[in-house]
Figure 1 (cartoon, helix red, strand yellow):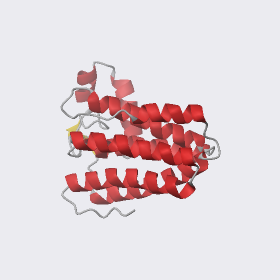
Figure 2 (cartoon, rainbow, N blue to C red):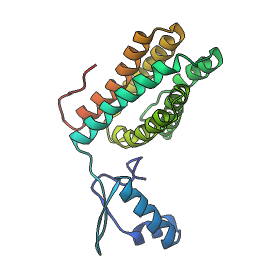
Figure 3 (cartoon, one colour):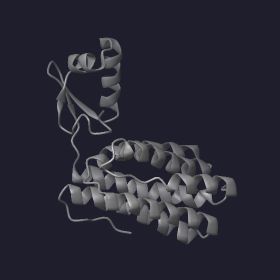
Length: 203
């Protein structure tokens, strides 16, 4: 609920409110909230409850800067392991965009997009790098979902995914880096603009 924006940034919640909302016991809710505090998604105020951590410009910049670094590195390493079969799978996943006016469209895109990036991360052959990439993608979902998404952007991400697959097929390390960097930077800029911040994202 936090990652999809159902629980908005800076909203106040309590254990009881989540227990009632999800119709489950207090113990799993309490444990989940403790974990979310450790993961930096909830703040806790003793005896008062929890607050969903807000999203600052610095949060956005820190995360997307790290995504650029890790995803470019992972994609270049993936060149050593990629196969035609995997490229065909990536190409199929890359055709999935979204229409903000269509119910469920964005959720499906987010799921497919995560798989697309996870496959490339896994191909790097570096488990720690792949795990870090997955965590960053999960966290950035919250940022992207609060952005002002449009149908045009849904089409743009399809073109960007195709450029990444084409670059991987070419075996050109520089082309891979450029395609991945452009894709991540575009999401970064979109989130910044939705926050009313002039874009600081650089290629």
